[in-house]
Length: 109
Image 1: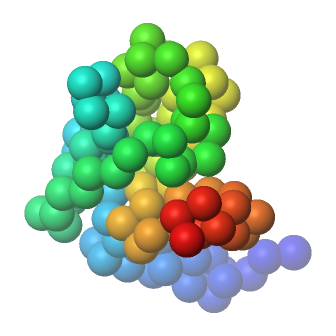
Image 2: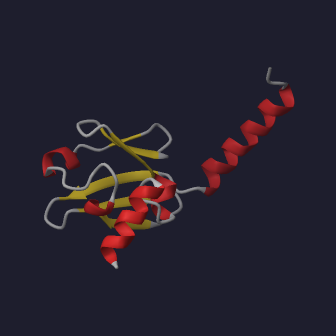
Image 3: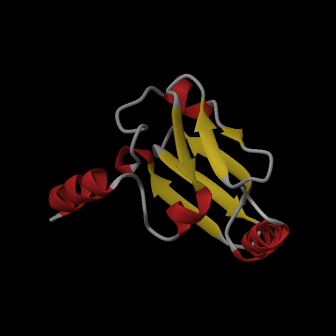
């Protein structure tokens, strides 16, 4: 059973997240560079090679260009790939699961 104090604490945490975490205003895939360009609510931009992102590596340009933003911009979704990535995580350098990050790190070394 959840009490009122827990509900209020969750509401405060959610509001803080909306104000302090990166959320996407716009996300564009550039097929010439195979890079994802994200513009954030915190007035920041991020450009990432899609082949470093879990669920997107090796995908076709057509599939990569179809990007949906979640209602609050906290997630990006590629419906044809059934792939989802958290925007704030991307800005923090997290491009997938722990195993994926180890694999990407090993390839870059």
